[in-house]
Image (cartoon, rainbow, N blue to C red; front, side, top):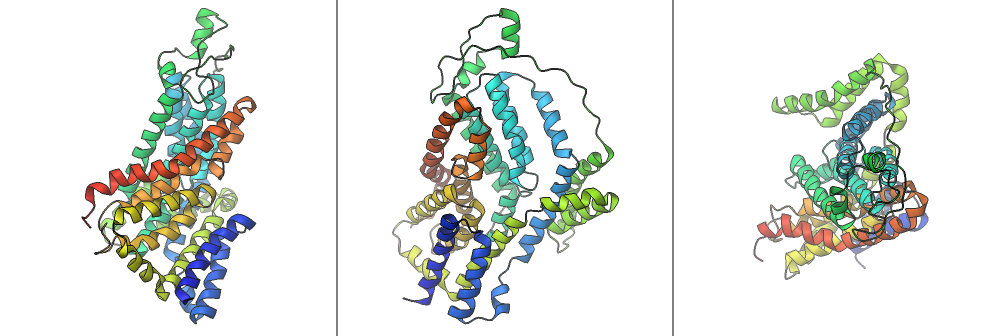
Length: 450
């Protein structure tokens, strides 16, 4: 067995051992990098660590620290509260409004921040007789859609991995495609799980106040669009006095557009700097103003993801220097249809992502997919990387991972089993539907005839 094959088996082993033994994938990948790089390939420690993605990790550090400050000052809670006030209890708008709110929050550093919106959304779904499966899919689509923003961890990961592999990449386009696909997913779920009924029904609070009726037609919580709702009285939300925006909250709120504008201007001035440096600088200035908040925000830095990305990319670097990626390239070029190879890669990425780390599988598969994009691979200058990233994220609503499990846990107990079953079916269906739709829209129109 060749060294290249042994190294590729090591990559598979990293994912398998991490899943079976619940060991941190990044730490495991880093250890495998040392073992394979030093003892199998014969590289020195300096060569192995040369593949450690410092640039990408500075971005993750700066972004998660800045938005950690946003959480600690209550700025995120303030944004969510004001957004919900604008939505009110207009039933048909609730799934869409909460999707928009959660998407916005998911853009702010780590998509897991949007988990704070999930219990609110699932509670409102129950009290307003909205299908919990519909709301769960809306929440998942918000989390994974916002996750591919250039200011969120997954989006930063895709951008860093693509650029390190010299693949042309537009983070704004990636985000727009992600939002578009996930909006389509929410629209399909909306009409499959009772949206038509919501459009024809006045908000629940008004209905109970004006008619006093004990029965109404609702969406229930089955897999269809109709059903008979359980009769219930929905209390109108009490009007509460909202606290004004505090000074530190205003400062953090201003820092978010300042981050984007500053980075844009520095880029135009051709200053060699990345988004993380700007974010870290702004975060440190805020911490200097209020050291207590600066200290508590440190715990919100996503060190786990930093280690995960660092370990995976370092190991892929070993594979690249060893020539294993080139061997995969030769295999890819031998496939009669590059689109079939692309479909297989996207399906594998989606399937593994449903049970393991989305960031980990993207970090591993993007470099492995490079041979399909270079001249002779058959898919040069297309949206394959966009398709791969979106395909790997659409499955996250399945309850095998953190996102789906959080949604199920936040569902009222009487609907929890149904939502768990529906999200399992929906998530597993995305393993096939996601790659087919994304490749059909982002790759096929631009594919080069083989």
